[in-house]
View 1 (cartoon, rainbow, N blue to C red):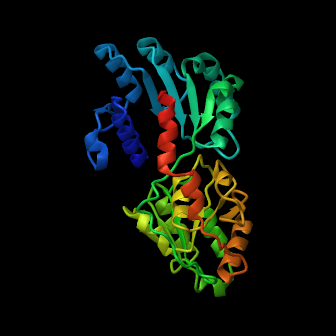
View 2 (view 1 turned 180 degrees about the vertical axis):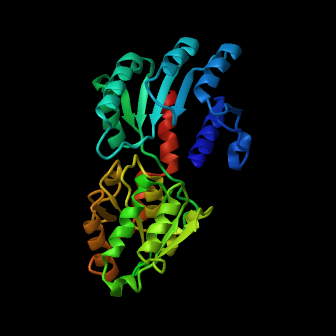
View 3 (view 1 turned 135 degrees about the vertical axis):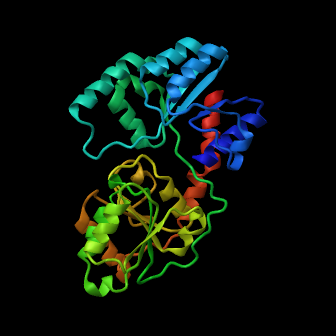
Length: 336
């Protein structure tokens, strides 16, 4: 989201709109140094309410990202500022849905506090539907979809896709919900002749990393899986591979999928979240049922043997519909 924040701030500046950015820390890298950032610490909602009371700032719009929606916070903000409030939802949902108690709690919160949010933004059609499901049908009249986008400039393009024995990568935060353990289990069931040549590089880190490494070792797959850790230059890395694997259990709308496709690297992923809004199975990637290890194994086998392959240039779809510039343009329209 860094690039989005930078470009959105730039667009506002060009149009003579002042923006105060409330972040936990006053970041200075990249274009953050040019932005008016107010550090909130670890309690951004409480800090913002106190700030509004002390400063009496006449905000016309308040836009929230990565903050729980339909809470008393929004009622307080509306009463203090009278601003138009826009809540952007980036949150994935669990595969089986929320427990009954949480469903009821969300409906109650929607009934009590959705009236104080003037516009809900879902980053995919999936998110739009889930917002109404979470908080009630009253949201449908004021909920819109604005797809996430990526900065295509700087993403190096893959030029030649191997017909057989392709190279695979994973780019993901290492947590259980990303489903990389399913990928490991799928590889276990591949023929030894395939496992002798298969290579999968895993980029990213996280709290589940140690579990995944232990699982790889226990199945004696160390020659296949290489954990690369976090990479500051993934935009130049995607192009080194033929396919990206994303066996995720829950997703909202994945930026790594968009970046991979922008690099002309097709994606193998699950039917969760907004994945199928960008991946057309058999055209620019392959989609399989979440947690279906057998289906993932068969896909790996078919791709590795060349039985299945993607031949189109996957970059054009991202250029046309999922660019960062389009995302900024659509978010800026919310201010008019």
